[in-house]
Image (cartoon, rainbow, N blue to C red; front, side, top):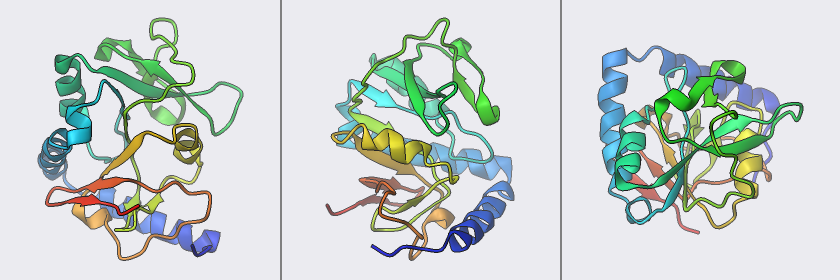
Amino acid sequence: MKTFAMDHKQAVRAAMLARRSSQPDAERMALSRRIQKRILALPSVAQAREVLLYAPVRGEVDTDMLRDALWKRGVRVLLPRCRPHEAGCLDLHRVTCVGELGSGKYGIPEPDPAVCELIEAAQPDVAIVPGVAFDRTGARLGMGGGFYDRLLARMPETAAIAPAFGFQLLDEVPSDTWDRRMHFIVTESETIEVAS
């Protein structure tokens, strides 16, 4: 695996974030629905008993339909919360309704620890993972804090699925040895199963 200069990662990240933020809301929502339908059709998701989701921000693929469908099926839904006083680490909490979310670090909705059960040593069947850019080898470029790379390293058996708009799929994403690869990348028009 190549090691990329940090400035190259930052340039790709900046370009992709600008592209994502320029997408009209109506288009983002329509494409998000198509992506979520494709994710729900995956056997690993259909059979899952516990799923890690993210709360979308800043133009990310929406997860509301996915979340609601999982709750309706009786699936345990986990969402991440930044660990206080430990930079770059996420704790997972079980969330049973939207009202259990509050404003968290970086403006991302997070589970309220006063009402949401902390799931120690969580090993969900599936993790739905946000990102800025992806490629067909499963490489993922995130926001640069390494939060999800650290989290996924603790969950080796969990299937990592990345929802992505088609334009987020690049020929090659800059990645390093510590970056965790996705098992599936799902866009509005295709589902890519990454060869292991």
